[in-house]
Length: 283
Image (cartoon, rainbow, N blue to C red; front, side, top):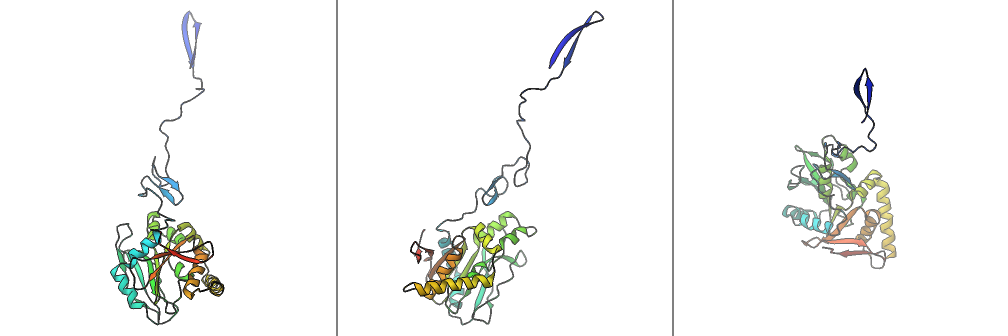
């Protein structure tokens, strides 16, 4: 503000004019919306999406935890109903499956095992459709047997909901997608082993889903398994299948294995520097 005085008609009059503030103070209380859509909220973007504030998520879902697959496998297969189902199907000559459910779409939902689904075939069982509603249940995975004794293949790994599609379904929240990925498990039972596949890295898993072609992926898996079996002294058919699966999806999934009559003994399977399958317990 600048002012001057002028003498007009023998009276002294003061005139003032506004001038721009050369260094205005910033607004101490800016208005904005956070990534959760909350006015002046505290949520922020992280690698897994929007967390903090009113999202209900304080951290990204645990990923790449070396113990995660073993822990989930043991917890699942120590469930009495799942253990009974494993013993019921381990020696079947045709594939029999069951779906895994949560009782609700919140973290407090309890685990439930669906009824037996019989295929009449020794190579496939239909575990569709995926459901995520209170009337049909919240599907978080599945189990079935492999009468031919082979390890899990790409169809077993990807036989679940497409995460990108789930995230775009009306009424399904970011937290619900995380709930699914945190709890997803695919269990494959042979007469000797119980394999458990869980999601290690949701972003990598989603990328594989988006480019998944079942016929092509299964053929790649078969080729890798055949090469490993032929070129690795002492390799079994099961080990060859494990190697093929980890070669294809090892950065996206945990693959664990335990003897069919064991409990709390899952071992994490990896490929070591010598290009061989190893089993360890990182917990």
